Structures are given as C-alpha cells and as structure tokens.
Length: 172
Image (cartoon, rainbow, N blue to C red; front, side, top):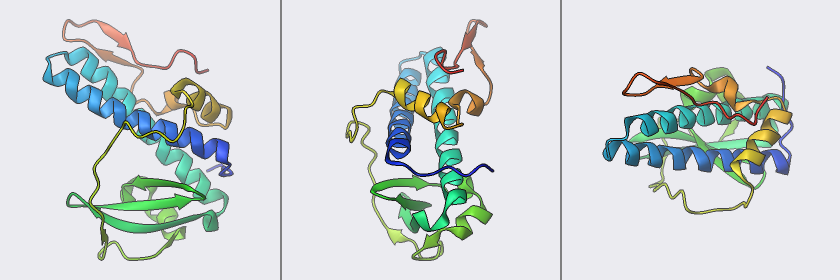
C-alpha cells in the first residue's frame, strides 16, 4: 500500500467526500421511498464508492505515519465504530473496514469490547468546507485515489433494463 501524507488539503477533501457519502445515503433512501429505484441505485452505488474511497485514504494515511492517527472505539446505535483523529479532522470508520493490521497500528485509547457510548445523529447539513465534491474527488485522484476505482461496478441497471453509468465523468 502506498502511504499518503495527511495534508490539510487532503483531509478537507476526505471530509467533503465523507459528507457527500452521507448525503447520498439519505438521497438513496428518499428516492427508494418515493419509488425511484433507478435514482436510489445510482445514489447507493456512489455512496458505497465514496465510503470505500474514504477507507482507502485513511488506510494509506495510517501507512504513512501511524502516529499521525489516534483513535477510540465508540458505541453508536448498537454498533462499534473506530473514531479516528487525524490532525483537526475526525472520521468514524467501521473497524473491519480499515483492516486488522492497520487498525492495530493506530494508537487507540480503548478496546473494542469497551467502547465509549457516543450517541450519534448523522447531520449531512453541517458543513466545515465549501469545497465541491468535484474538487474534492479531483484532489484525491491527483493524490492517487480515484473514486471511480472504488465503484463495485461502473453501471447500474434501471427497473426498465436500461444501463446507467454511475462513474464521475470528470475523473480520469
């Protein structure tokens, strides 16, 4: 795995990607609820790709310098999450997503069996950056992490058997 230096620019892009993934999750649910299966599938595919992109970036940051990342386990809605701090930026990550070997390299304040109770309500409207998703994804691609590489597949099929491309067309 190629290490990735956790610059503020990189971390801001990662924050924007994380917020967009949360927004896509909400939009996928809303589209499904109103019967728009195609839009739900597109949003869900992109959400999953963005979360995998986030995991890749965090893993590469840990590989760069494990002392740059600290963590603690949180109990959120009955699940255990790894809360990672990189500089002034914070990210929740399922422990299994980052992988056992890398998770063991992070200085974690507690054990997963004793998570801190941290009630959490996702609020996709809170913003810490005015960077666009396009700029954030382009920046991550320049750093070697292309969100299109993290799509499970580049297309989804509509309920009418049409193919819809879910890739971000501005990425290489």
